[in-house]
Length: 214
Ligand code: DX5
Ligand code: ZN
Image (cartoon, rainbow, N blue to C red):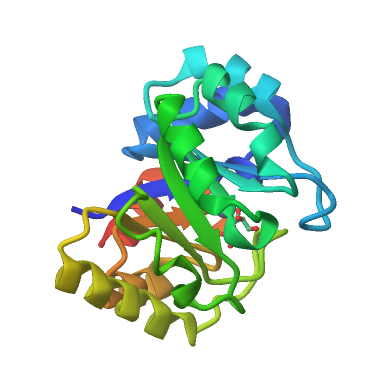
């Protein structure tokens, strides 16, 4: 069963609580929360206080995507704010295994994200320990970018590795997802589809979510 994770990066930040309710009412299971620090990626978005304020407004899974340097300094804050899944970038850390352990100890699910240029092999020793791999299909930092088709191979390779080894982790895909690219990534083996502009930019959000789910 494919899950849809609308990214609030494309929402109206002046009305975030309503924007989160809107996607939940329209059938989304996850709320994808893009945290950017202006260093790991050029943009700055929001921090744990915003997540804490949104938590009482929603029962959806809070899927926090940390696009920040030193994610180890923020794990407690985001867990206490109500994150369900905390995903950090492998490119931003030295001790990925330690972070995975810490996230789990805090009672959250642990995900690791890969930039388009980062090969799957970087996670080889960790696949048995993590709950999710986030495969970026654009370079992180902005919504509304074009899907990078060569990432389909990475998704398919991860799907194959999961089946071969009987791993229980989920594949999340993020960047440039719309009706067309959603069908490609579903076919390649993705479980959770993130979409920002294709959902919040749609006239009918319910329809947009349904089409991405396929
Ligand atoms: C990009 C973010 C994405 C972004 C996706 O750096 O991680 O979650 O919001 O936006 P779209 O779906 O518009 O590419
Ligand atoms: Zn994201």
